[in-house]
Length: 504
Image: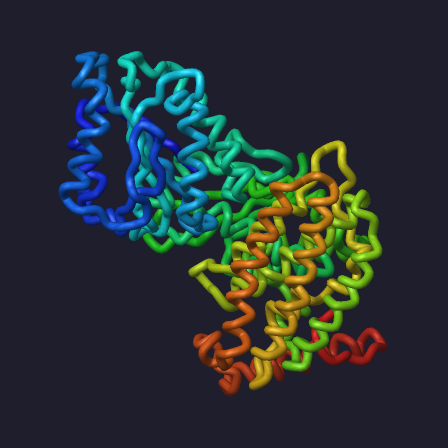
């Protein structure tokens, strides 16, 4: 959440602007969200021209009566905005935020005379970011001044609390455990360039999906490149035999230089040493990984090139159900197991989002991001581990690449039900440990996002849900046949038989 403060000399003028079309017709659905005890206004509806004028007059009234005219103007104004792709807040939540902020700043305190203030909502802008404005008088009803000399520090602290309490994107400098925040420049660039969400958030989801879906490091590199991300390794000092880190970037279309992020800048659990804890790490695996890192493109296709069978979806449902039963027996104090469950589930939703939502992140992306926060651990806590949810292994790969059949939407609905129960179990564990903000974020996601997706899966066909995938495209079948033939030869060479499906 970004807050910008300004001052002015006319409440009437500010109200005309806030309820008007804006400089570029960006103001939409203008309505009162909340107001203070010194100024009452009806909330949630379009106001008449006279009502708008009365609001402005009420903001100016105390200053006009007492003739204070403070330097810089008697009207204090703050805009609060969320980056595109952040969880949308309903008017009641914005009202809670506005009221809490005005109490913290001293406009509404029981021990002092109140000052008039009103919060105006504009809904979602054309760039996809929600924002509200709060206008207030710096002159109280008794003529005394509202002292706001530290208003920016107070605003920053309040925004940090709101980000955690309401499950919003953490702005840089406000990060809690493991999830780096966005800089103001990143948020403003996202709005300016009409991006669906900040690139750092997109990249974190791509990396998380690739890491959870992969059995080894070489596969991780191939999956990451296959998702469209640019990837480059960081070699150890003195040669190119050991990769010690990596960075990723999104491709640009306007000729601009890509903006690179190291794994640790995406999230603390996405550093290469941390990711390696979950992969096979034999010497052969390490050598294969260095070859993939060093190449400009994938050297040899692996599991990620196979198109799984449509029946894999029902196998995924059974795998999640088994993991959930095992997870319910894990003590809530076993942080490693619960963080691991959140990590695995985040990978599933990240893969689903990329396949179904594409470049327009929606409920699946929001769920992946909420679970990613739940997976973070502090330095003094055990790292996420996977033994408690070992049946989850392979589900992300199925979601990312299994073929779609006529019955796939029904299987998706069943899978989303099991994933929803997993979210509920993780939320309950948070609540039992007293982590109520984390629990609230997951419960809100469960009630809003998951229910929406379940209904879509039950009532839509494959073509409606994934219009860009043609399940009977002859070119896809030819490519799949070649991949299966390559895999069969590979297994025969090792004295094994190729199994059906792509799960682990």
